[in-house]
Length: 429
Image (cartoon, rainbow, N blue to C red; front, side):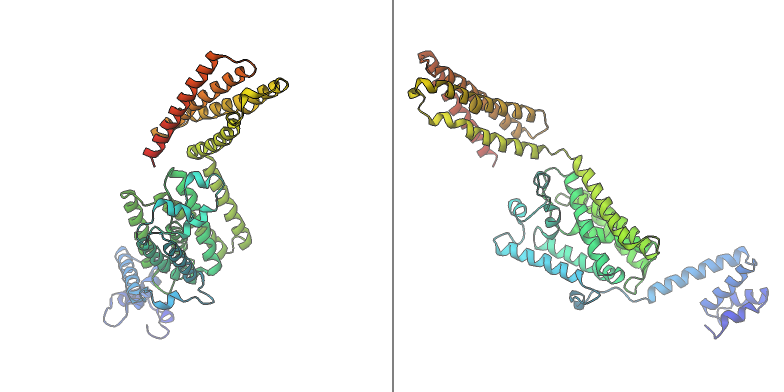
């Protein structure tokens, strides 16, 4: 552009400005656009000239996009520094945990479900039954080297652009908060799937980056914002569509992370525009995402968790109620008969009735057929135990051949029922 050209065109007549706007040989695209903008300011822009202005603006934007440096990853992006810290550290942590898993005997390519659960995988009935730490531990686990490699590449790509733009504190805050919410989203939708991986948190970072690019609050990595936004958009859309068509991909975590990340990004935009206090926005984000998580978790029908709790309580009651089978009830002195009768009622019959009641409540819930069959057998077993207790109570101080025969018959039925339960459990391991 010629020296002082913006001032020069202000002294030109409307006709001279129109001539300048059409002179491709002597004037640059920027100069011709300035002439058209001056005509627009004077309300002298015809429809044809307005079209020329739009075309010039579009072509200059494309030229600017092409001339801006391309976004490339290098080895130095794996080295933390004062202003770029958490992206490489998060990658190191994920790789280190994966190496520990492999060294402990977990498969390098396809870890089994038991191993992933043992290392902190996110599974609804375990997480909802007091193991809430799984919401964050699962974010640092991966189901094989390919899963790890893909996620770490994506984290590096997003992290280089985002952490340098918004700062390390905002970056790690967004990563952890969106990672936790992605885990909540996963167990809200998935009843019996073990969720692992950093992808939910990475989608959260995509949400943050999308928000700040859309509202143009940051210049990211000295590259074209439109180009970066297009890349992020393609990454999000492709992976979500791919996830819906393939098993083993936790789209619930991806979408949950993305939504929470976008909300966090919008909050960061408000901070940059000085609309809200920084501390207030951090506190509000924690509060509202915690509230949303609590509301989601409270609505989850945790049937497997209820089953697990009932079975644990059943086992305690069973062990306590079996005391009488270890006693010699035929040699109890007369002055102790009432004590033993009362004990049989309190620590025998009542406990089996409690077990039957708890298990009957389980029958009202929705379970896989194998669980329903197991609950039915355990109820039948408990009813036989209760009958056995009643007969043993009657036999105290009152010997009877018919009652002894009935007790022997029930004992045989109990053994048969235990064999059925053992066979059922063996077939479903």
